[in-house]
Image (cartoon, rainbow, N blue to C red):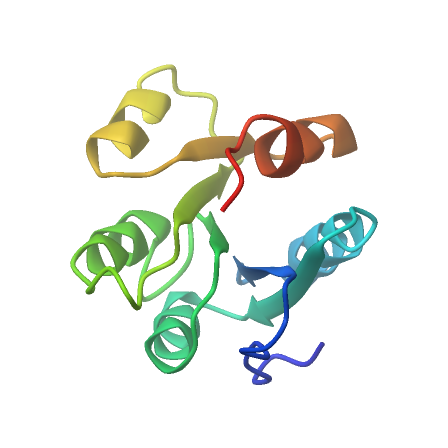
Length: 136
């Protein structure tokens, strides 16, 4: 998928938007998610582009890097949660290399649905996207 392609409204696949300023992380997340059945992956290079894409198209799940220039993951999460229900993604998961034990609580307090730690393991990603989430 290219960065600016929006999801096909006729598709039954879960649409995942990966937002990360690091190309290697974006590529790794996209490649990993594409190994799971039932997902279609789109990418954005930063929080601003991610918010623009969400405003144009509906995504089921967002994976958002916490530490990005201009608009960080917390601000993306705040803005997403202010959107109308019919526009905003069902799930927003922050991605972080930080190991602060209060981070999970901060993410939940802002309405986030979880944290994926970097470097991530494929099993952790699968658990967040496939095993632990209720069907959308």
